[in-house]
Image (cartoon, rainbow, N blue to C red; front, side, top):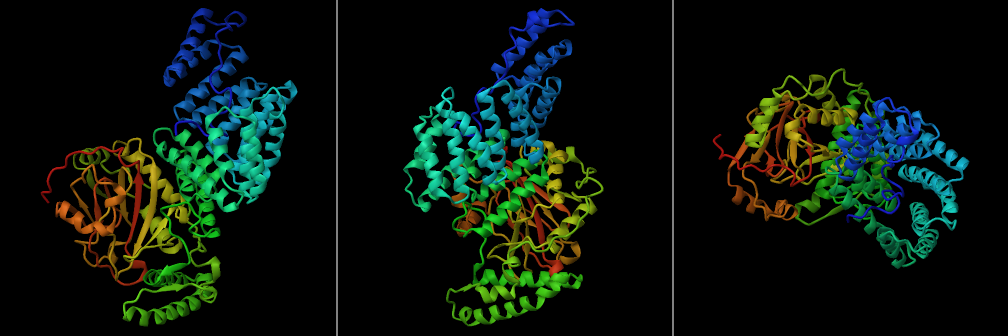
Length: 640
């Protein structure tokens, strides 16, 4: 698990450039010996993994040195230190300076292109330094450099899910790799990438040939060797090959997920690798999108989640490697009825706002709901199980495959005029309260402009595709629920309350919308470090201001309770017995945030909301950090 993937994170010649022999040939403004000692100190700090100290030492040397070759090398080494600190922007800035100081530095151009690719920059931005590196290596006759430049271009196209465009540069790289002076690892890694590109196009026989030849190259890298042996051992059938690719993809994903907080750059590499092996891994898309959010690339994150949403509809849900997202057009009777009723109310709501498409869809949805109601009535009366299949004729009433469980209605919300978080809240007091109690709430957490925007997103867009049996629907990041306003809220929350969220990254974001006639969420725990719930529906919809919120149990579960084993509704009676009634009940208020340790079990309080689509109870949930990474204090007994 600790070895790096074969095609991306093990490039040759990665590391700092030795500057130990350059003192005699350079012009110094200060004593050459002092500056050389500073450079060597920086190199020593790199070897000791003291990267901040290394950056300082290289910086002191640069202040007194003017030789362009040495300056470029110093910036190059500084970039490596920034990358080890997971500071991608700092690394890119350092490499950019290296290329400006010495435009003929091919390695700096190559590294800049590689770092931009991993960061998630636009295609043209990545291509520019890679093409420069390719030309410089060609002019100098550097075969190894030309291989690396072409391989990086191929990786860039694979990372953007364009395997056909990846093959020409990869074939050029293979041409260089086949030369005698290059290693078996070089040849094998390129052939592996070419094989994966053909797998992405469902050309498995062609892929198999590349995998077999790659193994004949006798790679020494243990990860490359083990991956190729796994692929070779699969039979010639496409089903067997897909099964092997899924297993390998999930292995990279699991390693990447584990490193999301401790080593986010390495995690991003692993998640990209997971998707190269299998493009149906929906959880890998989810985590990769979050990695881009952490880097501030909201548009890139949205692209990744949109692709995940499209992939989920292109494939049968059994083919999707995911344990969190249930999407499909065949739903059990109660779920389908609840989903259709919500969609019918939504379309009526939009039609009243003079939306032309909603007005066209309304008659079909009315007919479909009536047909479903009649079909289910006799079955429900005698208690038999029943599944109503959404066939072609039924789908036509729902607007066809382009409407049902698809994001057909977008809304235009201008960028917020101010930060979405209300920075007038007592952040220091809230952080002290959380440290003591592990459960807090704060009113008016969002600006009025932001909470209105979230309400519009939840009531006008149609991202709510995840149907739950207890009367609510969910909208997740991978469903299209990733409007920039939502991502900005997550980003600003960490800034507003840094001592609560610490180094915890956003791990999930969703909204739930509830039926007024059904229950809310039963007792459960969330797989995260810190949980944030923000209520969105206006207070006028709530008929009882003393209820409708959240019940959080103050007692931590035992350490030997497995998360998946006991976090199931069938265990609710056992959970109730253990937790008893030692709980805090926080009533519903619009724009109230409840923030608590995700180890604490919780459930929706009883609620009574007015009838009507705009009055459906809506909560926005944000999960930060990995479970097990948060503090677990002994809580005081409940005195409330």
